Amino acid sequence: MERILLGTYQRDITRHCELAQAHGAGLELQVYGYDTDLLDSGWRELLDQHKALLRGFEGELAIHGAFVDMAPASPDRRIVAVTRERFMLNLDIAAELGALHVVFHTQFLPQLYRPVVDGPDYRRTWTEGQVEFWGPMAEEAAKRGVVIALENMWEPEPDIIGDVLDRVNSPNLGACLDVGHVRLFTDYVPLEMWIERLSHRLVHCHMNNHRGFYDEHLSLDFCGGVIDYKRDVLPLLRALPNQPSLVLEMDDLEYLECSLRYLGR
Image (cartoon, rainbow, N blue to C red; front, side, top):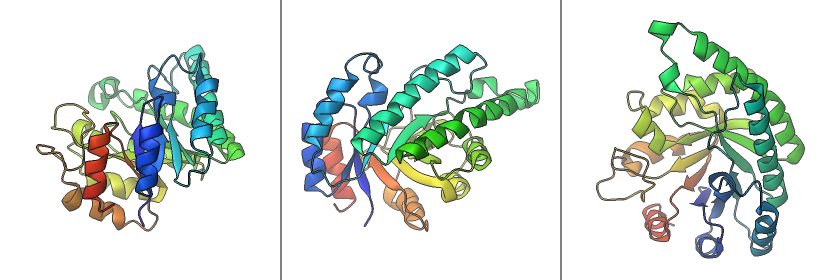
């Protein structure tokens, strides 16, 4: 059976937890990445609340790590240090929750990558910085029994993340494929190529729909959505030898219920 998780960025996860339990699903808690103030103040109290609520919860757990203004490959070492501090706290939170995956972004900026004009310098130095950052982070994840999943956002093609994963080559560092981001930001590279390139390291997948203009996080079956999951996405994912966890990344409870029905859950 497919491992389905429900995404939520709410602090109060009671209703999402109830829905997940009713459908045999897990949860991806995104508040630890989306709430930019939380990691400075209040995370301990919220984590204790979540642990109490999730006591006896049998579904798979994941969290989304900090991403706003994070820059793991920045040439500014102080920015890298702040990013590392945030991400380490996310790893600790995930371990205490018993989460399997922690999702992070690489923060690749395609506007700075102009190989015809600038040569390969940005891509090369960015990749080196990512490898330098994620190698030790993967070791820290291993100590805590969690797996880091690097999510595509603005990356125009899959080798950008794939090369980093291959260079680090750790079982505790994998890929999170965001299908909506592929369709929105990198549509000239087919989804098949993304899945083929990342397949051996694909551990997590974010799924939602949009109308082709911005990242709306709509239900999988949304009328007017540009992604046909049953035709174009699910057959590719189901053909993989190692199935990633599938996250319904839409906070709206109605969208989640529609998507669960769409998946036959």
